[in-house]
Length: 273
Image 1 (cartoon, rainbow, N blue to C red):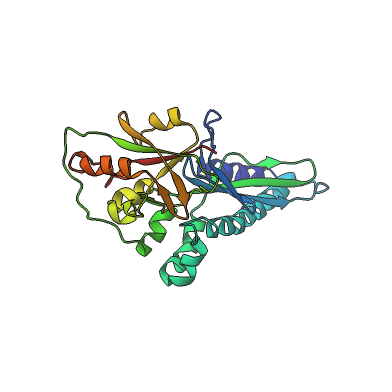
Image 2 (tube, rainbow, N blue to C red):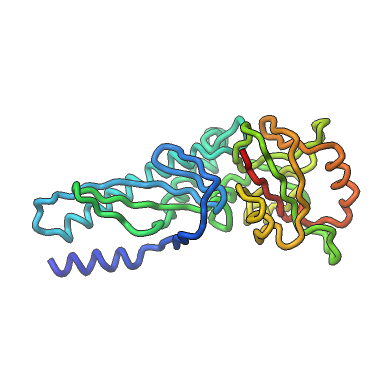
């Protein structure tokens, strides 16, 4: 009995976890099945459930078995949630898996690398709940996994010391706006101003093509756009495209030689419905 409890304690202590900050408001979230996509903080979280026998006198063994079952269930649910992550208005990760054998084969390993998110929860009905999570971006993130399906821009980032702006914040007030991994910014004529083909691949994998928030002040203080962002208002949203006015697009065009944030993915959308 004591041996089993020691093993359980070691397993729980050794499990990698994501720290939860109660002060972080994960406002841009999407629920898919038993999981959710936290676009603001860049993680995908899934919950799993396991059951143990309340009448079993060996509590340690029962909880350990329930914990294992909950983790397996969470990984199954994580796959469902990941497959629903929106790449564009008409494409989700599941489509990429179907079309690309490399992505399909790597998804299993990606899910196996999921880490515990917070503490397990033992319920009075004999069940245990476990949350696991994977990052959307970064060296081991989802975007890196699917990046072979994208066409990125030049590798080089301009060495400009006296930058006009350190980032771009676009306020999007449109009920059609949905968070996705590869949106575009276009002008009113449909000319593409910002998209995957404009950015450096390394920055895209590290940060994602855009970041999301629901609060303008919070966005302006985000490290992604640092201390001097240009703030624009979207005219509308159509599919993948966040449309800005021709005048704002011209302004960006005139500043092109003094911009570095385009290649570095220092762009945020503030979704304000």
